[in-house]
Structure formats: structure tokens, C-alpha cells
Amino acid sequence: MLSLNDPMILREIIMDHYQNPRNRGLVDDDSYQKVNMNSETCIDNLDIQVKLDGDKIEDIRYDGEACAICTSSTSIMSELLIGKTKEEALKIYENYMNMIYEKDYDADLLEEAIAFQNTHKQANRIKCATLGWNGFKKIIDEGEE
Amino acid sequence: MNVLNIEEIRKDFPMLKRTMHGQPLVYLDNGATTLKPQIVIDTIVEYLTSYSGNAHRGDYDLSHEVDEQYESSREVIAKFIGANTNEIVFTSGSTDSLNMIAFGYGKEVLNENDEILLTVAEHASNTLPWFEVAKEKKAIVKYIELDETGRVTLDNVKKAISENTKIISLAQVTNVLGYEVPIKEICEYAHQKGIIVAVDGAQSIPHMSVDVKDLDADFLAFSGHKMCGPTGVGVLYGKYHLLEQMKPLRLGGGSNTRYNSCGVVSLKNPPYKFEAGTPHIEGVIGLKSAAQYLMDIGMDNIHQYERELREYCISKMKQLDNIDIYNEDSTGAIAFNIKGVFSQDGASLFNTYGIAVRAGQHCAKILDDFLNVTNTLRVSFYFYNTKEEIDKFIEVCKKGDDFLDAFFE
Image (cartoon, rainbow over all chains, first blue to last red; front, side, top):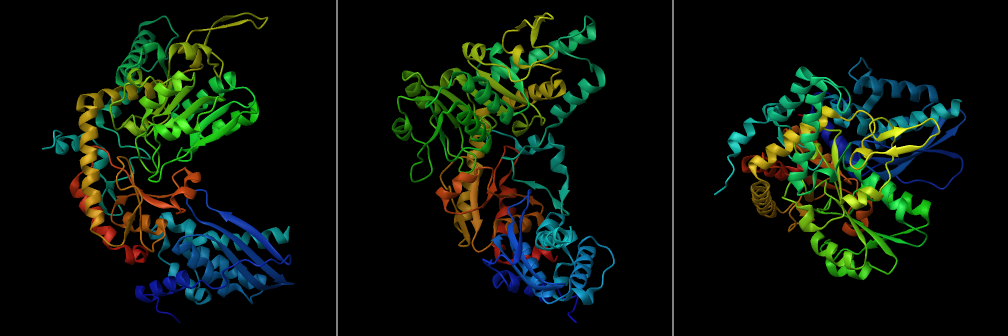
């Protein structure tokens, strides 16, 4: 369990994922579903790929141009959701959004993603911290239709 | 010695009393929009409170009062840029004005293979309308090459002109790099070849004195909100004979003298044929007040003081080793980055200290290829900014590496 009260640790988590993003880089593989997430109000522009194996999130990839908050939140999301079932992943998504929008959430489910717990204090960064997550959600939603 | 009493001027701007993120607001995004002095606010409120009627309509005292205010705004704006009163068309802003030039004039006169000259430094509002008109008329958009510092030079304009060139459309001060373009010389040369010159004044008119007759510009577009006026109002200047040739893009009440049921319409003369529908009356009257306010301070004083601010800021920035400046010697906005910090993260850090700066591509996306950076930070000054504010800005520049602190304080 990470200390929720130590900004230095949370800061290092973000910096680490910004400088060494995990699962970054797109793959040329038709079994992945892809979505482009281009923020209309800022520069962030990411392509996101998700590969499903039945009900399981087998892989998540992403690439593009994005700030530290957007890059690191997407990197952390990819690590968190790969290997989960769709249902588990959506539950984590829901808790992440609850945290961002200052509602009740289960910190244990979010692991390193709790680094973004202060996002609401910088309202202009909410879009950055949710762009990748919403790309994932969009792919899952489109798959359901 | 500075001729402006900045301390007194700052009292005119109620926005300067507010805070942002718990700190006194340091507003350095004047290229985006400017703050409004109390006199502009009062003038608008006065219209809404005391003589809120329509213009060019009723036959009663109130309507006459509105007419007088509205039409005297045209006189003040004409004086502000050295035009004749009947050459001033009120629009919704620079974008609207530039679209009117492209679709109302350009589309009328351009033929297949005619050439329109732009630069890669233009704002989207001075490129996208021309792209569309070129497509419709099978005309061709070409670019004037920038020199190695990013400037537009008369020599490069000459090189870009061919016998098919019909229109040159340029910003007087470019949007991202902030260089002043030699419009007067370009007009003189272009006119010898029968080429029409349209000028985007969005970033120049608020900051320097401009005389359209001296420049001999054929068209000029600018916005009210970038010069202490309200949003949603702007100006199209055109030489009268060109306005006569130009087609209005919107038709309706107020733009026609009479029409019959067979569809025979006679339009009014310029500028009225371009102002169909009830105009943005409080906007126009507010813009008049803004222009008067600026003229009272003096455009040359404003220009000189802003240059001083810019030079001061550049000299301080150059003392820091973590800053890349992209247009050190221009006169407009400063485009820069904090080394190793994505521009948006940088802007967020400034926000934490109450400082408004812009991050992004600044609506000039094709310039990326020239600067070799995909995005920058931008600070742009106005005459109410101070050296003390720049000092605060510089202190935050120094904190660049700690940009994530903004996320945790």
C-alpha cells in the first residue's frame, strides 16, 4: 500500500511513468481495436490500442504527443488494466473517475493511479489525466455495441 | 523614463484586482484576449441600462440616440486607423472579416490558376478561408518563404509573385513569432502588379499606430477583444471601391434599400450592405470606447512601453540556462520552452503561481515545420503589464524542473 500522504512518492511515480512510459508504441496488428483521442482544448493527442482475448484485456498500447500528466496516467492505466477481465477493468476505471471527480473511491483498486488524486485542484489538467482512460473506455463501449 | 503612469492605468482594469490559484493575477496571454478597462464596461452597461433600442430602425428619440452612438463608433474607428468612415464595416471579429474578404471579394475576382500568396506563419483564420476559396475557384494557394529568422521580407515577396498572383493576404504582426511585416513596401510593390493586399491586423492594431492610407492596404481585419474591447465585435476595413465590388455573405434586414415580390433587390451602399440583421450594438459602442481609451493613452506610447517590457523580459530570460527562446529579436509575443518540459506542463506550473501563459500550437499549425518544435509556451504583454510581473514570471521559469510540484501543492 502506497502512502497517500507523501507527495514526493506520488510525484516520483508520475515522473517515472512520464520518462519511461510502459507499453508505449503502437503495434501493426488487426486483432487490436484502435481509437484516436485528440483533446479539443489542449495539445494531447494519443492513439490507443486494446487487444481483447474473450473477456480478458490482453494488451494495451498507446502513442502520440502528450504532456507528463497524460502520458503517465495512460502508462499507469495500461499496467493496471492488462490482464484484468473487462468487468474488473471497468470497475477500476469507475473508481479512477470517482477519484478524479472527488467522489468516494477504493484506493486499493487504483494502486499507482492514486498519484492523480490531486488532479481536481488543477481543473485544467482533468482532461490530461483522463484522456487515455477514456480512450480505453471508448474501445470497450464500442465493442459492446 | 516611461511616459505612461502604469500604476494609474492598472486601476482602470478591475480584472487586475482578482487572483488566480490564490495569487494575484499576472495576465501574460494578451495575444489571446485583453482585459477590459472600466470605461468600456460602463459604456456597454450604459447602453443596456439607459438607451437599449435598435439601430437604423424606429422613428422615435430612443432609436435616434442609438443610431448616433452606433454611427459615431464608425467615425472613431475610422480615425483610429486613418480610414474614411464609409470604409469601416463592423463584423464579429478578425475571423469574420477575413472570411468576408476571402468569400465576398476573393471568390468574386479569382479565376482558375490565379494565385493567392500567404505565409506559413499565418493564423488559421487567414489560411482556411483561402484554402476553401481556392478549391472552389480552382485557384492556387502559394507561400511566401520566410527568411532564416522567420521574417517576411520584401525580397521573398517579390520572389513569390508570379504573373498569376492576384491576392496577397498577410498578418501585419505574425501570430507565433511576432515579427512586423513590411506591409507598406509590400503594398507598393504589389500594386504596381495589380495585386490586392489584405492585412490581418489582429496582432498589430492593438499594439501600434496603424494608418491604412499610409500603408495603402486594400483590406484590413481586426478584433475588438484584443484591444480592450468586448468579444464578438471586430472590423473590416476596405478601400471603398473594393467594398463596392465585394459581395455581402449574409443578406437580410438593414442591408437592402428595397425589394419587391419578384425578388428584385437593391442593396444599400457599403458599409451598410455588409451589416444585415440587428448588429452587435453594445459591442460596437464598447469598441468605440476601447479605441478612444487607447488613443487617449497614445498608440506610440503603448508600443514603446511594450517594447521596453519585452526587452526587459528577454534580457532576464537569457540569464537562465533552462530556457529556449524562438524569437528573441521580434517585437510581439515571446515564444519559448522550458528545456525538457512539455509546454502544457509548463503552463500548468505558471498557473500555480497565478500567471496566465499560453501553451500550444497557437492556431498556426503549419509553422511547426519551420520552428522544428511541435508546441511552445507564449507570453504576450499589454501596456498594463509591469516589470514586477515579469520578475515573478522569471522566478517561475527558474522552477521549470519542478513542474510536477504544480500538481501536488
